[in-house]
Structures are given as C-alpha cells and as structure tokens.
Length: 475
Ligand code: 5CA
Ligand code: ZN
Image (cartoon, rainbow, N blue to C red; front, side, top):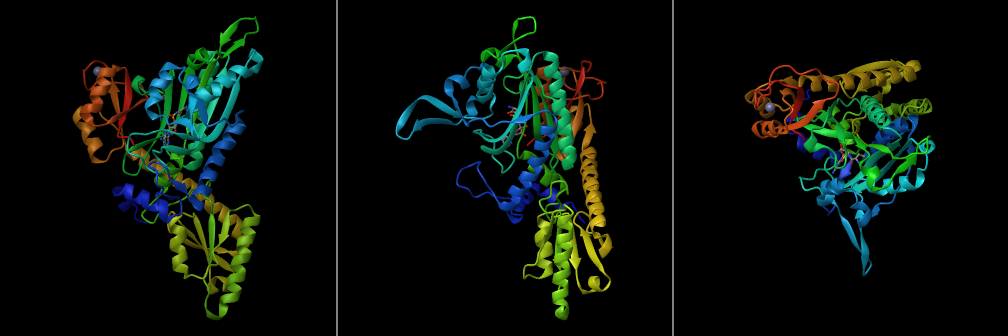
C-alpha cells in the first residue's frame, strides 16, 4: 500500500478523517470545542481504558473533583498563576447575580485538589497519596486551535496527583510515571522521546518537567504527555503538612502527570495511510469486521455462516462485528477501511465450499484463506501480528526522522526539508538556546532523558557542549 500522499497533506488528511471515520464533528459553533461522534467516543474509551488500567495497577485511585475553583484559592501559587492567567475562563455570574468570588473553570486541577489534600493529610501514615481523575478542563488557548490537538475544552484530561514524605520519593514517583507512560504508548504503538524541558518551558509551579513527544506524519513533534516534580511549591501555599514519626511538621513533596485526547490524535496519525485510519488491535473499537459476499442462490448460507463466524469470535472475546447491511461489499470495504478496522473477513460461496474464510489485513492489504476450524486461533494470531507490525512501522519512521547535527545551517535545512528531531550539542545557556530557536526556526524540546553524553561544541557560542538538546518543530 502506498503511504506517502497523506503525509504531504497531513492536516487535510487529519481533518478529513475526523468526519469520514465518524470520529468528531468540528462544526460546533464555539472555537476550540468539538463534538465526539459514536465511533470516536468508542476509540476514546478504549484508549483511556488502557491508561486507567495501568494507573489502577500501580496504586492510583480514581477521584472526581469539581470543575469550579474560587479565585482566591486559585491565585495562591504565584508562578502557577503567572503561567495560566492568560488561559483561564471565569464564571462571574450566577443567574442575574454577580458572584462575590469569581470562579475559574479549571485549566488543570492542582489548585482544586491540593487544598483538599491539606485536609486529608495529618501524619506520615497518610502518605503517599496517589490519585487521578479523567475530566474536562478549559484553556483559553491563543495559538491556532486544532481538533483533538489544541483544544479550548479538553474533554479528556487524565491528571494524576501525588504527595510524598520526601523529595526522593517524589523523584521516584516521577520515574514511575515515565515508566507507566512508556507502557501506555507502547501498548498504542505510538513512538516517543522523553525529554527534560528547558527552564523556560517548565510547567508553571514545577521544579522541573519531563515530556513525551511523538512525531506527526509531516515531521512536526506533538507533545503527548508530561510529568512534573512540583517539590514543595504547592505544599507551602496550601499548608500541606504532615507529622513525621519523630513529631516534626513538614511540607509534603508532590508530583503530577497528565495526558489528554491528544494521545488519540497520535494513535490516529502515527498509524494512518492514504486509505484512512489503521487502528492497532489493542485499542480498535472493532477488531474484525465480517462481510458476507452473497451470490445469487447462495445468499442464505453465506449470511448464516457469516453470523456464526462473528458469534464465535465475539464469544472468544474478540471485538468482531457483522456488517449485514444491504450494501455492495465494495462500499462496506471502504467504510471499514476509513475507520481502520485491523482485519476484514470475507465469506463468499467459494469460501463456504472450501470451508474457509478470507482474511484481509488493513495494514498490508494482504489476503489469506483461513480454514474454518482454525478461525479463532488464526484471527488472534493475525491481530497480534498486525499489532507488532504497526508498532514497528511507526518506530521505523520515528527513527528515520531523528538526526544529529551541530551547525545552524544543517539544523535549519533539516527543519525546513522534512522536520523530524535533531540532536544538537549545547552549552546549557538559556541565551544560546533561544538564539538557536530563532536562527533555525525550530523549537527546543529539551534534553533527552537518559540520553547519550554530549560531545563537540555549542553551535551558537562554540563553548564545549554540556548536554545534547533536541530541536524540532512542534505542534
Ligand atoms: N497539571 C499538569 C499535569 S497533570 C499539566 O497540566 N500538564 S500539561 O499542561 O503539560 O498538560 C498535560 C498534557 O495535556 C500535555 O502534554 C498535552 O499533551 C495535553 N494538553 C495540554 N493542553 C492541551 C490542549 N489545549 N488541548 C489538547 N491537549 C492539551
Ligand atoms: Zn552556547
């Protein structure tokens, strides 16, 4: 299957597929807000089911906090506010009455959750706390909004918040968050690179921020998750203290980490092709579609056997769907291809005669006959193979798009030609970082986590490099 046309006009491809694959309607009359359609919502629930399970397995408990935060509480942590003040929506009225205290629509929930932590935590025995919620948040984004990618209402914000007795425990929790996200993105077959953000791009109120980025088909990076070590910044303003075993009162150490429906955009874009979506079987709302190919006198047995095959798969825990609509098979093929159903099973008169079904892989277009008796096992095997192959194909592109360079001209050329990620030696000075961004038209993602040591010199000041940074163009 040819897979290049869509890369060149990726934005169009993405916007087109949202509608034609029944993911999202982008015509809602408020900028930055969109409507989830049934198939899209199923996909969303599949993807967030995976992260939910991972969090539950690693000691996180789900909670649900209110959407509104009183202004006085919201504004306590100075840096946090500086970072968010331009992005907050305010509720100023209740009916006709002006509110005494304005209410913020949460842009994230630190300031809603941590004052409650302060009520819950008394002694070291109450720690650690690990909670998460999956909620909507509002951010008045001023950059160009984009469905699923840059939203003003993020409908699916998974935020985890933790509190610990020591810095080291908080540090270990950030590492744990990275591990959890790696498992999550591996499950989705989404390639990533993890970086430590430069100081000027650290989350408002954090000691430092780590971020996961993936690559869109057009060579731009997309940030798909972050993990922050908050130190005691919030604990100090919300009086979040605990009593140590020897009777002292100390502030807790905190972390938070978040992802949004942007990860769903990532799944769609890293596996897509000219014909549409290509869902990894791990999260595909429908893993197998069964299409009867009726033929004159053989209509009844074809329908019957297709239904029986579907039932057999469903009973075996496979998400199979029988498409018995009164449409030509070709129309059905197209319909499910756009939606990225990983495997199609065709059942026609010849298949019945030979006691087989014909399987067609969405990712490769490959056709093969499966003996009817081996249906369940063979389908399982094929789904697993598709899963592995999609992950490998996505990583291959990601690696091909990762370069090394140490002079401004080459970096700029790489940025202009096909994008991707460029590893660049850097002296560590903010001034040089900003100048590098300006001269290459790139954005600095930060320092690769557990990356190689730097060699060579900074392309701006020619001093010896202290570390490598990654330069890209980001969404
Ligand atoms: N409180 C922290 C961690 S829970 C926080 O808000 N971090 S964040 O600002 O980096 O957001 C976490 C992730 O949410 C980002 O990495 C990005 O993938 C996603 N995200 C942030 N803003 C938006 C937005 N406007 N639209 C879609 N996704 C967004
Ligand atoms: Zn320098």
